[in-house]
Length: 311
Ligand code: DHB
Ligand code: FE
Image (cartoon, rainbow, N blue to C red; front, side, top):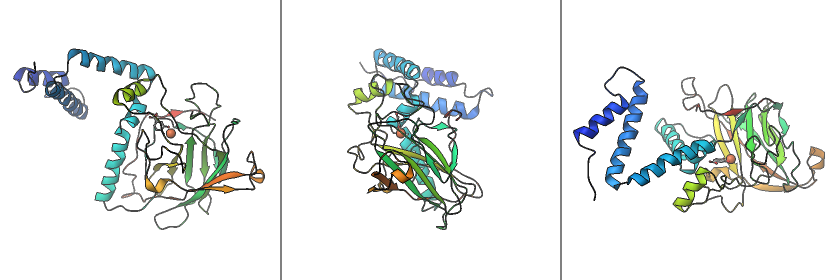
C-alpha cells in the first residue's frame, strides 16, 4: 500500500533536524546541499514507494563501494563526471568563450608526479609484448593560434591489458609506466613515445560493475589516452583522445567520447631511430588549443583528491 508522508510536519521537522538547518553551527553550504539531497531521497522513497529491503540494499551498497575504493569510478560510469563537463561547456557558452580543444572527463586514474622531460618523453618503461609502438605528438597553441612555450603536457593511459600503472590489480607495472609529462619549447611541440593502449574495463567483481549489471550495462571504455595541459596564461585543459577504429568509441561506459577527440592513426616506419621497439609504428597527431584565462583566472579549475607518487 502506497502512503505519502513527505509533506507531513513530522517528516519536514525530521529533515530540518537531521541537517541542522536553522542553526548557526556547521557549514551553511554543506547543510544546504545535504538538506536538498536528503529531502530528494525522502521524496523519492515516498514517490516510488521504496521498500525497507531496497533501502538497506542501497545502504550496504555504499559500504561495498567504499571498501572497493570505487566511488570515483561509479561517478564516471553513472555519467556524473560527464554531467559536470556538460555544465562547464554551458558556462563557457554563456560567457561566449569559444574555440579550444574540447574538454572531456579526467576519470579516476591520474597519478601526479611523473618526471618532466623537455619536448619528448619515452613513457613505456615496462615491456608489453601485446602492445605495438605508438607516437603521440602535436603542437600546443594559444587562442591566438601561436605555439605556447613552457606548457606542461601530461598524459596517461592503459597497457595492453587495459590496466593503468599504480592501479594495476596484477601489480605488474612500475611507477609511471605509460604516464608522462613534457614541457614544450618555443615551437610548442610535445611528443610521447609509447605503446598502443587497450580499452579499460571496470573491475569485474567491484561495486561499479555490480550496479552496471543491475542496469543491464557494460563497464567498458574504448582505448583512450588522457591529457592534462597546463600553461601560465591559459586555462588547464583536461581531455582524452580515443583510438580510431575501437568498436566502443560511441559506446563508452563513461561517456567521454567527443567528435573532435578521435584523431587519425597513421602507419609509419623509422621507429627504430626513435627508440621504438619495432621500425613500423603508429602515429597520432593531436594538436591542442588552449583557452584564455578569464579575468586573469582559471574559472573552471577542478580540485579533487588525486593519487601521487614520486619518480
Ligand atoms: C574510469 C576508468 C577510466 O580509465 C577512465 O578514463 C574513466 C573512468 C572508471 O573506471 O570509471
Ligand atoms: Fe582512462
